[in-house]
Every structure is written in structure tokens, then in C-alpha cells.
Amino acid sequence: MTSVSADDPGIPTTGVRIGLLDGFRLCVNQRSAPVPLAAQRLVALLALWDREVARCEVSGTLWPEANQAQANGCLRTALWRLRRAERTLVIATPTHLGLCPAVRTDTDETIAYARRLLEPADRCDGHPLRPQPLLGVLLPGWYDDWVVFERERLRQLTLHALESLADRLLDAGRFGTAADAAYGAISADPLRESAHRTLIRVHLAEGNAHEALRTYRSYVDLLQRELGIGPSMQLTSLIRPVLPRELKGIRVPSKRQAG
Image 1 (cartoon, rainbow, N blue to C red):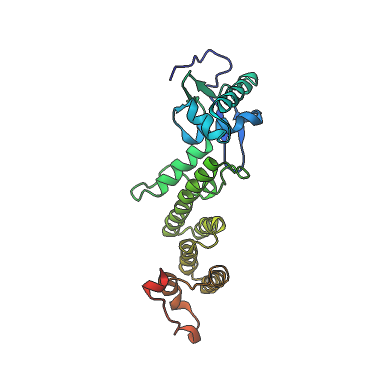
Image 2 (cartoon, helix red, strand yellow):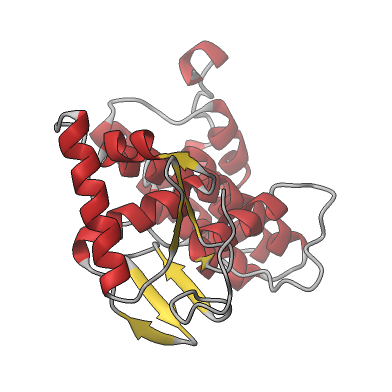
């Protein structure tokens, strides 16, 4: 890809950030800056793919129902609207497109943070252990196939990271923030049993048997109502020590039933 001169006043060199979590936005030196609606999808795609992309691949992805000539025309229009708005966020060659290297994105930051949390050997020194960076939803209200795919991929990564974060915070005795992380995972996927197990472990570590039982019962009711199934062996074994005496004899599901 050809280089771009930093002397061009339209080229951002510092302080430029694209937000894709909870909606599209562009900030220049911490101030909101407009991007034409017709060009937002182009910028978002290049930000998420984070690589040089052939023009034909970009146009075919963004305008899948158009023929190649029409899609290429739409791409040229989107690039023109960006230049007209003096938003040189995209580096273009005759064959490829890419996001300007100076531009930062919140998704890159979230992905990096999530991957660090999922690396057992990484103590995340210098990074505050908090769930907020993992709680955003990628471009809500956008239903393009490529957005739906990237949204689900990010959701799965952040769900695992939230559970890992809760475990780290639990080990550090930071029960309140650990519960917040577990609730974040539950909010993103209410039927996710591993998130409920994590929250129950937090309550048990605090000595809050009542809260642990309430979480367990609420989840069991949800499972039965939504899926018509019972809890897994892992969840039942976790809660059994604090069950009321009359329920101590509940049967733990077999591995086959739990699966």
C-alpha cells in the first residue's frame, strides 16, 4: 500500500479514535467529528478487518446485492464523501484500501484487553482490572452480515474475558467488582451457565449463601422456562453444600443429561 504524507492537513496523525462499541463515532483530539453516514460502513469495515483489503472485496461486502460495477461505483462515492468531509481516514491505492495507521479504535483496545485477561501467565500489570471495557455492543442496529459475524465473534471473546476477569478479581478478594464482571457476562447472555457459576462462586466466597441460592434458583427457573432443561452437574455440585436441608437430596444430573 502506498504511503501517505503526514504534511497533508487532511491526514490524521495523532488523537484520532474511531468508536464502534455502542454506536459509530469519530473523535479527533477528544472532540466528536462527523463522518458522512454513507461512509461510516466503509470506515467500520476497514477498522474491524484491520488489514489491507482489495477494493473488489470491500465493494462486494458492503453492497452484496449490487453487481460489481454498481458496487464499485458505490465505493467510489463513499470515498468521495469522506474526502469532501476532510476525513482522510482511509488510505487508498488503485487496488486496495486500508485504515490510516494513525487511527485508533475502541474495538482493538477491547480485543487486546480481553486477550490479556485470557492469558493465564499475563498478570495485566499496569492495567486496571475492571469490566467496563468489555461491556460494549458492536454497532447495535447494524444488521449487515459482516457486522453480525464480527459482533458475535467479539461477544464470545468478551464473555470469556469477563468470566476470567471475575475469577482474577475473586482471587484478589475484590468481590464487588468480581460480581460486576460476572453480571456483565450474564447480561450479555442470560442463559450462559458458566457466567452464573462464576457469580455463585463470588457469593459463596463472600459468605452470602442466600445470594448464591437466589442466583441458582433464578437460573434454574430460566433454564426450565426457556429451554425445558435442568442445570448441569457442575452447577448443582457447586450449590449443594448450601442448599436447605430438605433439598440436600436433589439428584445431580448425569454427564449425559448435563450435556
